Image (cartoon, one colour):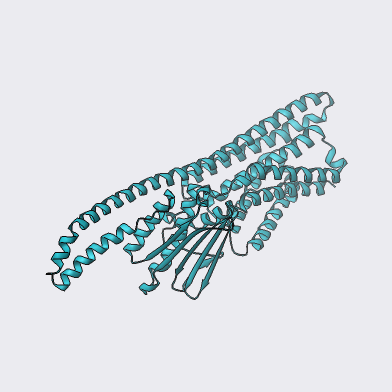
Length: 453
């Protein structure tokens, strides 16, 4: 029965690790192709590696008495398998995967702290061997409740992959690696003190009180370390979210100022042209055809650029659409906008700018390479329909659309500077409980987004 309990303990450890990891990743990260096959295969490998601990421990038992830290590198390697599982199943950065692995590891250690250290080592040392099935049921029940609390308190609130957005920052990744190694070293030292220094005291009846006091103290230290690091990781996520919002607000402010200056200069230009228009019209009568066409084209261009300023009543949308409209006009792309919605105010500024910005960027990529000028058309509609916010983007494309996991891929080489990417769009849509539908027919691309806001 002891071998069976050892295997169950490894199932408790790795199974709990993987379940919490799933809670932290499933809603916020983009799934790779054949996601469930990858997930099943990766989980099987992780469980197999964890089960190998039992024969490995028995094989190393003669050396572990004198060199207890000999098993440490094994656990460090085992903890890397869930990290590899994230990268295998989800389309994300190493930094984001490491962040979630640390969160899952800390959460599982917190659960083990109460089930193994407190219940088994401190309160009821002989409980697993005396009542193995009751012990397993108690562990299973506790883990189910604990996982639900972790999801409600932390995992369910991590709606957007903020760490992944800044995943190119090597400083964050290096800090996470160093923190994880230090945490692993501390936890191994705590476990060594528990198993090889404190637990042997329990064999002496007269030392029972001292044993329990030392156990409670060690459990308290373990709890405080775990809690502190969990809070630090959570604050890191919040800091990234605030940093993202600050960057976007600063960008909006710069573009808003540019838009204002653009509008002011254009209006001044039009006023000047209007003032001189009657004189120009009189002068045109005596101009040659070529000079007359040139003069008319200049006036028309001034009016068209003023018409590029979009006004919907929402500052963020106005700024974004004006920016994209000016970009389109400079490339002979016609952007048609229909915005009639009161629900835009219910979407956070960062989310709204990211969602529309990436949708329009993809549409612009689709049409700017077209040779036929009549197909360089983008249609954007934002409407309230049936209590939901409806966003539609339609455009032509050249028929060479590359899809990955059901979404179009950018042709740009510098993906870092290409907004936050399609992953952010999908994460934002999931955040608001909506859905995205992409349809292609002949050379027409249609993107539809429904958000129940």
